Length: 87
Image 1 (cartoon, rainbow, N blue to C red):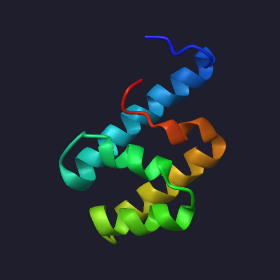
Image 2 (cartoon, one colour; image 1 turned 135 degrees about the vertical axis):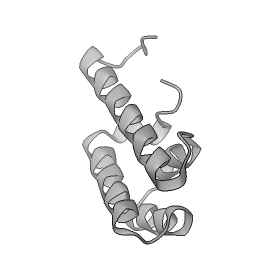
Image 3 (tube, helix red, strand yellow; image 1 turned 180 degrees about the horizontal axis):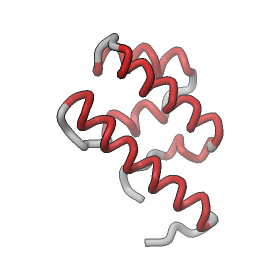
């Protein structure tokens, strides 16, 4: 599926991020469901992302690392606020 208005490279990067998030979620909570990830990407601030990561995934080093990387990816591509579960 091709998303109109999104460059092929950006679409490829989103798919790679989607796969990375699925693996991370499987490790962190046992499920590849990206509902939480889409919610985290919709949040306005990095602090909110980290707060919800801690609440839902725990205050572990792996969860913290996941939250930080998600914030980094969101800053690099603001269109991620629309989510990645339905690419």
